[in-house]
Length: 286
Image 1 (spheres, rainbow, N blue to C red):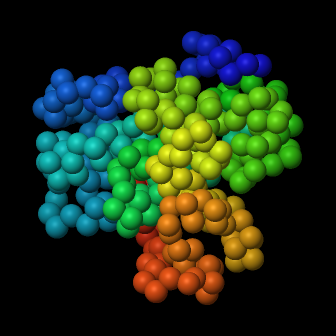
Image 2: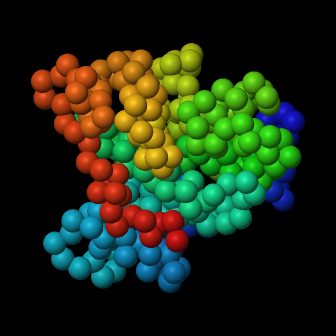
């Protein structure tokens, strides 16, 4: 199957909630106001309740109770609220996907988003953007399993969908990989071109015609998430570390405990555990 055919199946494309569609428009539109988004969020009781639960979670370390959607928008900021609503919308859009352990899959995406954001923020890069990319980077896998389950089944037998070599395996068998599909879905949803290009490049950031730093941060974050979700040993962690991507970003490998002993840096910050980085955000996966 060609890539175009995979995403040109209206009956098999995920449906994004209306408020999430409005928030996607805000990436490139100056006409979307915070008041407008707040009113739409407030009109969805379930989403409002989840947003408030997230705003009051340990992740954001708030010193007072956030009781309204307006308060949440002001405290969290428009970009983070957009990320939270988009993440929730993606989970809702793919409720049943053959061949994928959805609980594990979304935990991996959340870990990727938070790890990527930590890395980018510590390098004074755009942490909010890479958080968005981290949450969205794997949706191509879900679309592939929903649209071409017969083609995916033998690949799943060869390698876990979260495996480091999964994109290369898919490219060899199908002519495209999950990053390509994620990018095509983002294009259909009218994401800005910069995010579309980054989603395509995340699986293999050094192979891109033009290097994307956000894609590389998410690539590193995805590696860290994979080591946790797949339960890799310290030896496997060291062996699988994408050192060339790290070098391109100028980051010392000592940010990971298993690699700290090999670090040559003088002031490397050790990344907190992923459970600490994501504490309170797990309700996004409900």
